[in-house]
Image 1 (cartoon, one colour):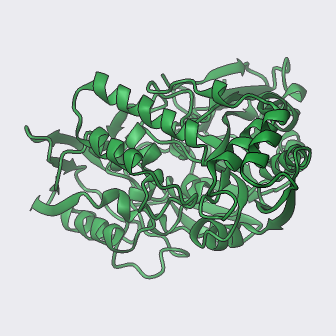
Image 2 (tube, rainbow, N blue to C red):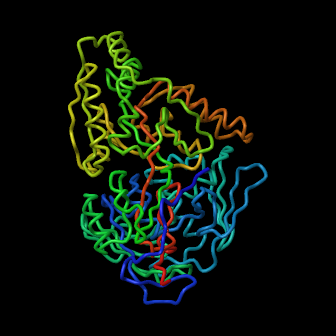
Length: 496
């Protein structure tokens, strides 16, 4: 089960901004400031794969349904839904009076237009290719028909890239129009992004302004938190000790429901040989890597599956750290005299840069020379993720709510399959999972898929990370979700 735990939580002094609260005397509307390391790559949820974007846009737009901290589907823009007897039709009833931030009604026709836009041009449109029809029943009712049974269909409507947008608005990338609690006020790239209250939103909201302040350096974030310039930071394991045992701060540690890996381009000449990929896995001491880069805050994984999901199976034992076996495999593959590979690392994510450099040293020790190139995030997205012009890269992936959504990127034809992994048997397992109602068999299929990935090792699977957030102890309502969203309308400063 997904969850979180408080390392410490007590009632000391926090930000001096004040805030409206729940269950205490009201104060003037306040500002919540969060330090972030990476700028969004735009604010159009249909046109991005970036977690840094979704963490912002989840406060501007709404999805038809969303999730709580445990991953349970709950209402959002839709107040209720039904599933047809054959499982092929999902019908949603929208919240009464839903309105976009530009004042236009968000009715069933608007929702249909938004999904038609997602299906035609969304980065993740392939995830929704099973939708064969969208029908407006009345002003507040809309149905989605699937061409075949997909037992994970409801979760598709909870992900932040399925946000309902005003499809007629111009340039959502810089002028987002949604129905969420906030709207864009200003954005100075690489400096700050400010959200203010959406006057059309009628739901709960405790603070009127949310600021995302770009601070790539975590030490600067700690200083800013202590100085009251920000209220929420995400810290690494080496920094959290500064706050433990201090009543002024609350520390929230939560499983990431994501994963971090060194992806390999399985279409590269050397990496197309499974023995080379196996050698790379034997060459790296994964436990030492996690300890050295993440201070031990992470759970090792052997496949593309986070440990927090119920269908997880442990495959860590297949390729233990064994440099001698790595050299043997390289020799069997014809590389006894060594090989050179190119590794591209995203500059904006220092942890991935650090991990990549450590991995490069491990690989050098077994005869794999790595040429490291550090690139900007925009370049990584265009040239590596979309262009697939790489041998190795270290990156993280956002969480999913079910095995199909998590693993479908490995389908041979998937636009998200930047690892260029191809296995007809794996494709067939994906197809079977999507139409299998029996939970026991579905779990078996999920285990089979994990096992195939663990054996074929299209990547070096590193860990399911643990996220650690620090806030003033007076800040309440901040939650960590199993997908990359924040709900700042629920956050407030306690006056107690």
